[in-house]
Length: 280
Image (cartoon, rainbow, N blue to C red; front, side):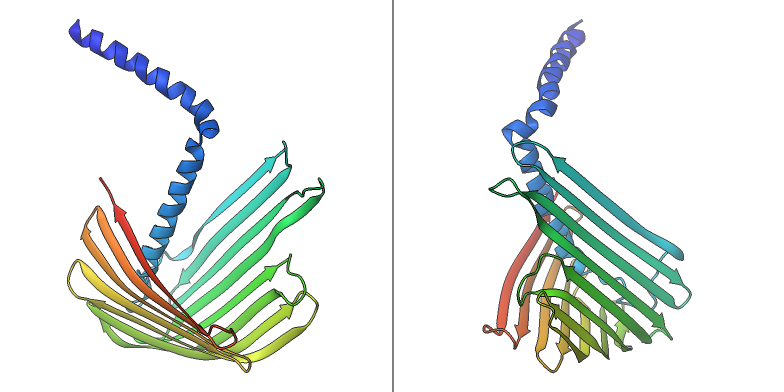
């Protein structure tokens, strides 16, 4: 009898708290906070995942055939200010024998009412990538990559289209379980088009380095370097990171990113970052 007496008030209290939460969470800001927390978690997870290079050692082990994922979001708001938001993300991979090919697509469309009540577009972006690798053996491979980006709302001398296509060889200098280092370099074409119609196509040279060093079971370091050189500019970035896996519930990444672009007034930009995941 005592047990029934205790369970009944708890169940009643749970219903009292839980039922209004669905109706009031948006009004009092709970949904907004949950969304912001998820954004932070996604950013941290992305930062930690970047250090896990699937192609670091030998032949990457991918599921044969097609695999991937797709996500879509559409929100229409008809109220004080009408708006529509459409987002699409697609990631596909095809692995067969020595070939591994990947395709990625991101689409963002948004529109809403301005101060005068006119419907205007606020986002019209399309971003697509293609990446292919052909593995000749454990150390030597060939790569091909393509990237295209479109900003439908660019004006004046803003870049409305940005594309690059490149091919070249890659080689694994070190290919050990606790240390890996690979280099790849190639030639390609860079295309830029401004919103006013002016366009420019240049030959581009690309070079990349991927270095991994595991100190012990809990600590490893990565250093990723990329350089793109064309007639008009030289762009480079270097991402140095140290990762700590203290336990299954505690992960930390400390990184230092340096970006260089000689076409900008401030040629160098440095960023220090700390990402921490704690489970309890």
